[in-house]
Length: 390
Image (cartoon, rainbow, N blue to C red):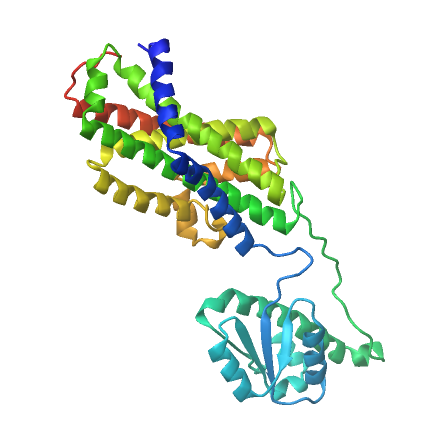
């Protein structure tokens, strides 16, 4: 059974040990703030400054429709275009990895209706890009396709319209963020504060587990077991003290993000509280799991760092999950970091309601209880079943 008085005293002991190390306490709160601020600043982009790939256009001719295509490319709001010769384009491609080179053949100056229907050979446009710039090349291809279709339709419809008139897309596009709108800058910092907070909670859990390993090595844990304290009281106190410090980290980190970068809760406030409690429980459960599976401090630290960094990457704590390969996105559904990120990001800047936040918090608690069950069983087994009463 749980002994409430002893439970509080043991929890208070761990909290006092944490507070006595002033520098360690400062780093515990400062590191996630610094990491979140750095990641947010790296991915910050003013919403008034659209993302536009750099495009170098090489035209083999400037006659007919080809000249209008080049002018349309230069006037496009979706690209940054510079026209030059082939040699200069090659040099820029070698020196600048984010440049996409478009080579327009002379045959584009004279298009026919049969070329649009694919019944004859079509001119070949070359898109040259760095291996890291595949998405930019696809972006440029889409914009170029739209402009070429528009200009070619205008050219081929002259006999029907009897005069040349500018053609536009037969629709309008309205962009907005749902369910919660917000500036791109705010979303960037919100994502980074959620991701770095979760990652550092796992590292805090690791530190707590390493402290337990140190106490067992130094004989402190054995002296506690010799006292009239039940097994359940000892483990619950360790879990509670780790979770309370984790909650303090969440409050300090998100408080700083709100004051300095405007990180706010656009979804359910109750959902945010539930996610904070679930994340704190995951941190403490991770700590006990590290203490039981690591063996010694050195081995536990090495394994834990590798596992935490892998979970952070696959769980979308560093970069948005949609940037990961499909197999990684599917695998991430089996990881606690994915549901922690979904829940915290959902209630902060995605406008997640309580029902969805409760779902994420429940899954996160399921992972935590599984970790606690494994840690409980392993600790009992390592003690040889001595004084196993709960």
